[in-house]
Image (cartoon, rainbow over all chains, first blue to last red):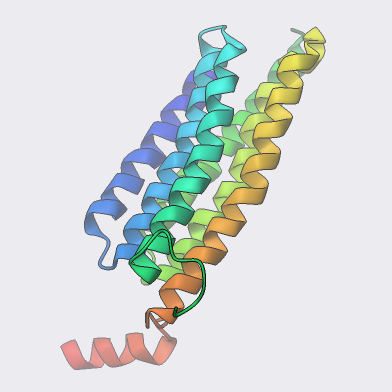
Length: 90
Length: 114
């Protein structure tokens, strides 16, 4: 049953790659990458149960946090063209 | 694992995979950024919950509390971060001038191309 879930997640990741390649704006690509990261977290968790090694959940936790920070950082860069800027318009 | 637990895991994980694929299909098919984000973020919360709950059933039955707590934290982190990322994305895209495609835009496009 976890193999079926892994297959579904891989299909969703392939569709996310399609959107990331097609995406007309940069924001479509960012959204696709964010979705890909979320599916990666789920895939790592499911693969851990599939292989009978639930220790993989630590990696999934790390990926969940890294994915969020990465998305916010890319969005801030695209919006302000600068990661170190602290205030609006200064 | 008893038969009922197996059936429960099958239902949870199977519906989670189903919603994942439906959301990804929506991300490819829908017409503009905001509707695509709707498809992506709805499945980010619902399918995540279903799949992780399906993983948690055998763990809880075995009484492995450390792994159950890790699953719970993954769920909580995803439930906090994915709506926040969606909000930041919509905010950035809207202020960059990416306006939603409205219904009459689609009909104008169709009439214009016909």
